[in-house]
Amino acid sequence: MQRRENIERLIEQLREGDEHMRVQIVELLSEIGEPAVEQLIEALDDSDKSVRRGAAAALGNIGDPRAVEPLIKAMADENKWVRRDVSTALSRMGDEAFEPLLESLSNEDWRIRGAAAWIIGNFQDERAVEPLIKLLEDDSGFVRSGAARSLEQIGGERVRAAMEKLAETGTGFARKVAVNYLETH
Image (cartoon, rainbow, N blue to C red; front, side):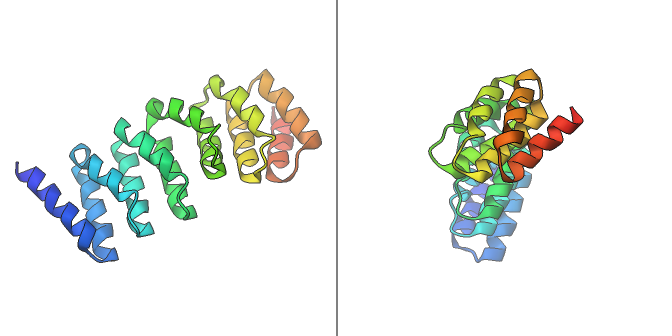
């Protein structure tokens, strides 16, 4: 009961405190762990980017599967540093994050597609190959680059064929990844 009351007090201060205090509260909630997951999920929508970043990092450290969907939603945050911390958190979530990330490869929001494309290669799961190959033709260079990088991590014959095509017709970082892949594999 004492722990619950402490969490509730921290949440009240999280809503009312200044930026510095709210960041410290998020760190305390991270140390509390699983009992604070719901509050940390709520903090992903805080008006302050430092609080959102701290909440993402804390959720990644805790690794509770309830945080996967809210973290995926947070990949669309307007702040690139929040998106980076959310991506890092998702990459720490383990297998629970794979299927939602796979689905996110077809999200309407390029930021979510791109972040998912950059992260999903960490799983080295061949189920991501075809969706990633499709993303090599996405309108967004960020998405194409993430897809190329993840395909590089996964490897295989289908990836090689896609990289050969990308090396011939691609542009920017995605093309560089393809050329490097072909030189080293």
